[in-house]
Length: 138
View 1 (cartoon, rainbow, N blue to C red):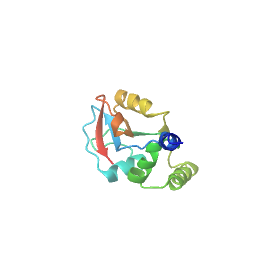
View 2: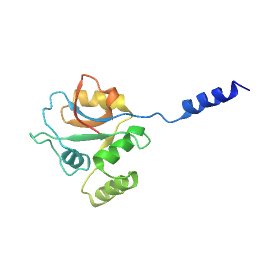
View 3: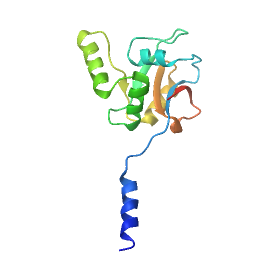
View 4: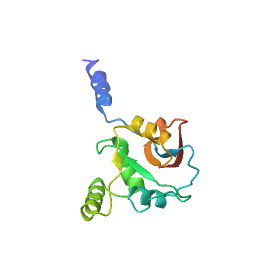
């Protein structure tokens, strides 16, 4: 009986959702632009099509069920999941925009950003490699 309670506690902690740390907005290492929160929001909502120093900005997104995406929606897009979905549905319906391409996971995000100077994305800050540059953390 003494061992049941510790085992149950251990199982509870194992089944708890994984906590994520800081969100890092990443760009290609060759991109020297400094981007503030408002400009980042404009890029990810399709209101800004390029970087301040000229050059196309191509935002990427993670799947809807990815835990770090919730942090992105709250801090960068500044919308709830439902608001974000409705926002892009309206733009697509009116022909005024296409949502960011969704990649499979953070590894795919890192790889695409490292290979293309136009792409901007986000990952958990703990996953950042030297192949990309962090422009903001949330």
